[in-house]
Length: 354
Image 1 (tube, one colour):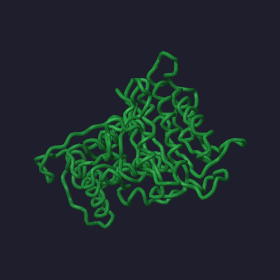
Image 2 (tube, one colour; image 1 turned 30 degrees about the horizontal axis):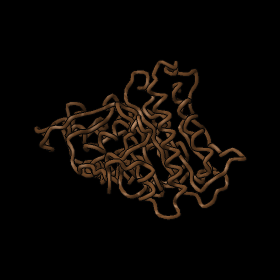
Image 3 (cartoon, rainbow, N blue to C red; image 1 turned 90 degrees about the horizontal axis):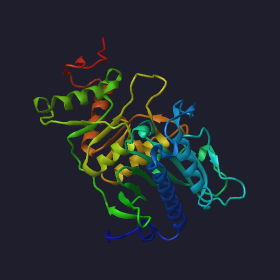
């Protein structure tokens, strides 16, 4: 595959099978939305777009001004081309129906317009995540059309807004990274056929929630922290940016494991990240790059969704590390997990049973 100046458009023409031109056109629209968002974010405080609104989204989270701006940008770029029949966004409560008078297509689009927006006021890398599903007809999309397991995705990707703007995507044939050439205005293939190392010495998790973790996660982290003095027999480094796109991007390029596991901090939420437009697209990208994605107890892409804003525990990254976490969950659920000593949790875990 030629990589010198292979643009996104050329890549899609070469890689998509005949009859899938609408998917290519939709991905070009997504890329156009990413370019617009990149320009908006680059202006920072110059346009007065930083800060929070006196409002919450459907998740009960305080909305940033840029959350709304980026959401509107994504919708306006993708609603008119005739490739989609509906959209779902983190910032909208219900399905966004394509307005009457606009052509509709046989795809549906799900997206998080500004992942990591809590960091945006501090000029930390943020991103956009998207997922594309096929639909049998071009009738207006309804909720049930979106409630499909991640294994049915036809494309997925994310944009990273950092020192350079990158678009990382998969159409089911590997994971590929494109860098925005700001002078030419094109996304150029710079990271073809990315492969994640199977093993790693880095993990990403929010340790401020450690007292709420389930025992399998507590066990895994305790072993990583023990380093060469413990059963893993080598040292680990911890990373935490609080931006899923930034975390996953690092892992895709050099390996690692990202965990936002189930915990007991809020029993009403079985997980923190959204299945349909955060976990599923990232899981597809990770698997296409040779990694693995799981809830800890089930392959992520095989989870049957029950609502468009469903939350889910997430463990993804280098395959062997994710499989180890799955093994610890299986042993714990079966009551065969290993007794361990941890300075953080004492014997076995915080949840020592009688």
